[in-house]
Image (tube, rainbow, N blue to C red; front, side, top):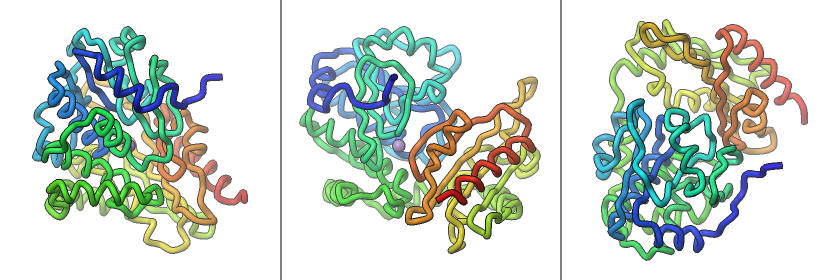
Length: 340
Ligand SMILES: [Mn+2]
């Protein structure tokens, strides 16, 4: 059976990079802070090494990232985009084909020269090389180690990008994946000149007023069940239309019900608004679990629906009507929260 684990070490990864001239760098669609940071930092490092670099984001890219330095050096992948011939393709922060969908066919042709660098529990992309460290809080932690193997200087672009990555995936150092190395890296990046308060403002306090209107609807939808251990939130396409928001505006909503002491699992079910003349996109389901004795492995839960992720944060896309998704997911969550 195919297991998602490393087949090279980081020294090997560095060597493969060193002997490549043209390198393409990509990450999962709808990049989060970690994906953004990893792509920006690695591509800046490769340019420092005089490599020919082509880096791509599959949109939407959150507005807040556009003001961060380095983002402008990454192209936006569109349907008609043709990936350049490269000696090496580096896929960061994912190994899941479904998350690379718009680039899928082109990437497939380049699998023999593709390297995955990731910290997720699962991924099915049959790349030639894989370095997967599931203990890493963020892909940016691994990228840092890789850059050290490549003896790259950490200028402002690289330092800021790496900081945004580790901050994003640890909820600004609150989540249980935060480990001593994460703080050591944060300290190192501050010494390189990162202004962490400025980055927090730029990344986390950059919403439009419409976000509040959508948040009100999300909170209004919260159902507590299973003796208040499970919270389920849902947003339908109409909520997005009427508040002039899109799916990216739901970022961090899933954290809110966790303020209730008894809540150990939160589910956010989202029906994305369809574009004109296009079919309804699949329903998105996000899962979170608090750490501790009553923790639920939400990667397993998401796996029941064809998704994946981390033990405490995972997601799935389900191609069924909203009501049926709500019923099926709610039943599965309550079942897993009862079993010891
Ligand atoms: Mn990540």
